[in-house]
Amino acid sequence: MVTLNRIYTRTGDKGGTSLATGEKVRKHDLRVEAYGAVDEANACVGLCRLHSAADPVLDAMLGRIQNELFDLGADLATPDRPDRPLGWEALRILEGQVERLEAEIDSLNGDLSDLTSFILPAGTALATHLHLARTVCRRAERIAVRLADQPDEPVSAAAIKYLNRLSDLLFVMARHANKAEGDVLWQPGATR
Image (cartoon, rainbow, N blue to C red; front, side, top):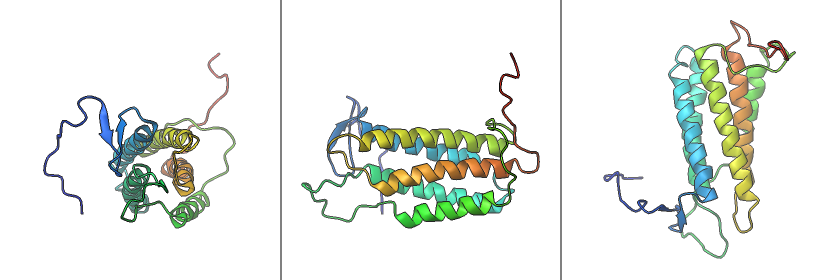
């Protein structure tokens, strides 16, 4: 259980923060950037939910995804360093969560027409917000991969897979949200 009874602590006033392990880092640390981008993606999913009430299936998926993105932020904020045991079991993204995203992609994509062009991030309000969430999720993925490429900066493989599949799911959700009106197709060179 988390208790937050004081919102400001002043500990970050000089540009520092602490990871879940208690390790002190700068706010521009790549790990902080990674879980910050995940937090931003989560806020974008919240924007999507402003428009998803008419589709209870998507809304339920998005609600679960928001919770899992918080879990993912906790995963990224708690590096697994073998030389520094935690003393508790860290919250980690699991392969089963990645597999569930894949099943949802397959389920939603099964009802969609084949793509004949790249699509623009447009259409319904829900679709457009889902595309925004997708792009922020892709940024979070790039940062997490960059972090994982650093020496002595462990990132679980499942966490990176989750971000990769989630951006795919958000893309398919956007197409699903545009199903009635149709995707907005890219027309290469149309404005030359």
